Length: 246
Length: 195
Image 1 (cartoon, one colour):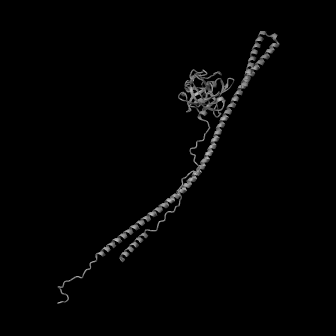
Image 2 (cartoon, helix red, strand yellow):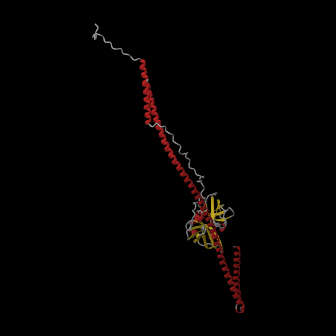
């Protein structure tokens, strides 16, 4: 029995010695050094979807719109027009009729010197060539607009500020002033005296007509784009001189 | 004959004590028990060492994670600060943008108003220019009328020296010119009143 006890004690000593060599000190748990990481949050709500500021400057269509002053025939008349090229504008024949002096001004009040003007014989249209470059121009639509389509007129009603009005194509009717045998574009865009020569554009901003007459509120007539295109294709269709009663 | 060393005497070896079987069993138990005890102690020691090393590794890893966490927290605070600074800058920029937009819109409206004002002024200049032209025409016609009447007066003073029919013709012509001048004057007045 003493031998057994000696063996047990010897074994225990051996184990303890080996354990001591292996650094048997108890391992302390790591101390909590940092609190829970919080997400980075803005101190005030971010309004990343905020609407862009509304700029009330001039659109390309407004830049292309022109104010025309006709001095002649014993007085002064005003009308509208629009550029279709760097030095080429379109208006009505009756706007430039009988002018001894034709004055053109832009959306920002800049005066544009006129080189020549000519009036069409087949519709109430006129083209004017300018010395200075025009600020912007309007693209011509490939064809006439359909009935019901939304249209916009941009001009200088009553010789006042540049104004934009919306309407719809009501149909194609005979010319109410009988200056043309071709059907004209009836639309509901509100116009006034002085709006004559205003461009009528569709929702894409392409030219679909030229305002030239009104038979009452919500009933204005425009020369359709197809007619204007035909006139532009025939330079001989323009007369250089016009009378006051044209 | 008894004597020592009788060669024919059978040698009887001393009696060999055979260990009892109980003692062998105890020894076996002792050996087995001791072996098991040694094995158990060895296994326990190995397990203790293994777990101790594992705990130390966990501690090292926990300290690393803790340090990383501390770095992340510091970075988070830095990012939070940057975010708030950016927000402040954004608010300032938006405010400035709003002011610039307002100024732009005011300028655009001013341009519209000035363009309209200039155009109307030019219209007025045109109207006044037309008025001057028309008044000049009326004045010329009235001058011609007055000159004609003076000429007719001279004729009438010395009427006997002229053919009466010629004087009447001149009078009619002068009268027609004066009527035209009067009509132009009336039209001019009407035009002025209309404008």
